[in-house]
Amino acid sequence: MTIMESKNINVRGELLKKLQFVELEMLIEVDRICRKNNIKYSIMYGTLLGAVRHGGFIPWDDDCDVMFKRDEYEKFFQACKEDLDTTRFFLQDHRTDAEYLFGYGKLRRNNTVFKRTGQEHIKQHGGVFMDLFVYDNIPDGRIARVFNKMELSFIKNAINSRIFKETAYSYPRKLIYRLLDKIPKDELFERLDKMQKKYNAMDTELSRIYTYTVNPNVSFGYPNIFYEDLCEMEFEGHSFLATKYYKEQLVISYGPDYMKLPPKELQRSHNNATEISFGDIFN
Image: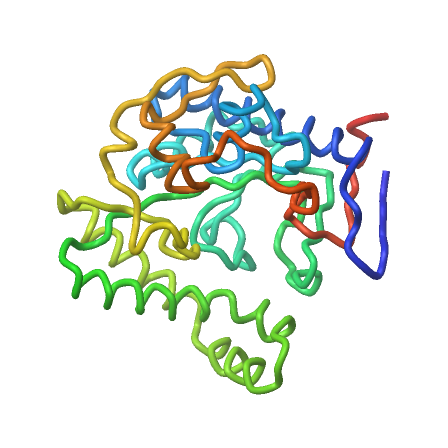
């Protein structure tokens, strides 16, 4: 099944069900590898909210999210070299895909296509994906956190500049991103690597995804204590791992009324795409 349009695809109905099927397939694979190798992870964001509020997918959600602390993600990265079913899946980060432009990982479904709007020109593996978010420590102290946040914002924009130089709405912004795109990506990832090793060696209060916009409900990051203890949580008839502090996590992410449904006009998928294909999965 292939859908191509000059504008965003309306992801709903049978198409949404197929996307959710593939997303669940990938989530099960992540869980299988983590349990086999005693790796800690937590379902996160819309997946966590869906588990708590709906017992599965938010009805209009089109992806799955999990998070790892850095040391657990590195264990997962190594475990995938032997345990990942590479006939179906591809573990993507900047070490496995030279064209990849994000500082966290994704699991991709082989022989599928999911072309994100505005990223059609990027030559990365472009299959249906789930996000593997990686949390790294940030420094304690407000001044140190402010400078850290500024540097991470610059690095994020520089890494993503190959996308933003095409999608920015104004010529001046496009020009800025074209200049940022001249910075070698390897140097940016090396800087991120040095930073995460420095702060992960410290016992700090907060952590965050270095190359992802911090939730507006928090100033700098999330309490590390949230990810020390896990619990089992049902999602689409399967049991996955989640932070034991899932209520606190959801309040930070979505506010105290997270159990209430959003207005009808906001009940829509959020990963805009111009092409989606499932290969022969459903043949």
